[in-house]
Image (cartoon, rainbow over all chains, first blue to last red; front, side):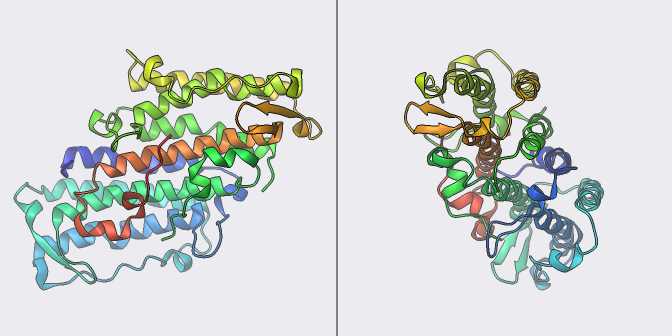
Length: 179
Length: 179
């Protein structure tokens, strides 16, 4: 389906509560474990989502609206959370993410992006020309991607414990989501 | 990691609230859409989880505890929800799932399954000999599998809308979870 503000916001505003319900107070055995090299723990992934709120989506939307393709986006550092999350608990990251998301949705609303503006273009440092509509749709899909990544890395902690049932649980056996 | 009651319950008891936060009140465009043949909508998947609460996990645990391998499990009908969910709204399914899960966790607690009992075995109609520990670990991994399936099928609604960003969103392009 096409990007639509109303439908997109319905997902974006639910992500903080979804993550808090899934992860808030959960034992470290579930939240701090990865599933091997280049995989992220739930803790890592929440930090990544927070970094996106601070430096990616709304920042890039403003660049498109104010400068178009004349000002390429800054590169998004996908692993910034490995430094930025240090010293913060998962519950602190969840709270910070919820606050940042709420602020960004308020900003998005205030930008009053008309259907005409959705076709405006920006310059992605690797992908080339992208539209504002594509950026905002990606914000949504990126949330869903990382919720999927969190439950996937959690499930892998039981990859052995389920025994022969792994034959029915593709989440345990297919190539894992990395970044 | 090995199955442990305390750790498993921490995930199992969070699933209803996670699904309600993610899906409660969400527009049908997100919750009723599949991503092609043999894929399930979020609505379908919640119905499947509810059916598992009613006929699978605790029922099979009791079979193991009371009969061991002498009484094979009944086959679990993975697509029963296509009939059973008819006429019920997603919010009704979410409520029924939350109630059934709470009841089942109360039953699980009351069964007081000791480490010794975890090694008891049952007969799965397709997989053969399985342990109680494997069954209970699968209950957890099955939740996570289907949360992953829900966000995956939702994300696919924006597979085109994200444009070139699909290169960074594996959830949109890798083989999709089916049943």
